[in-house]
Image 1 (cartoon, rainbow, N blue to C red):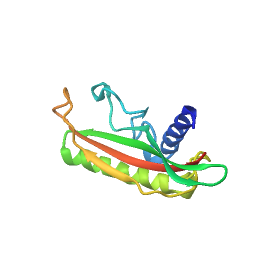
Image 2: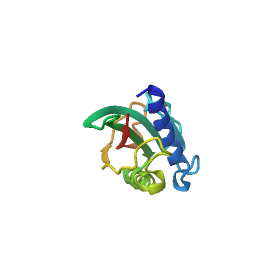
Image 3: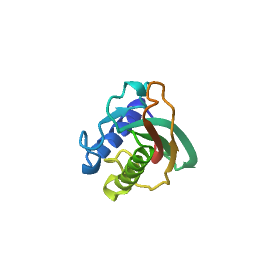
Image 4: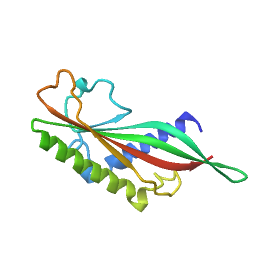
Length: 151
């Protein structure tokens, strides 16, 4: 598997999310990042979404020509608001929307880049204290999205 394929899948996930009216830039999501933003203090408008490749695991399943691999991607959603509950609710809505978009049959293969298989996603929520942003409520969600490829 070459790095270009990982980049292509990350870009396809971003493009798939951007194409949805509920996650369109800039009316809903202010910015998309290829990879996790290294310095959240530099983000000027929220919410933002990022996608990054995390890991590849072999399943041990193979036929005579190909092995099956599970690729893991992190989809991060960062929300910010004055009130904690506002940031939380906004991020929860985005989690539901991302799940719905990626579960559509039309999006399962990410334009033919991955196999048509549904794998469970995990979601983790954090409320980080970011220096310089103490006056804001920050909610940071990480969706672990897995896909299958054969190589």
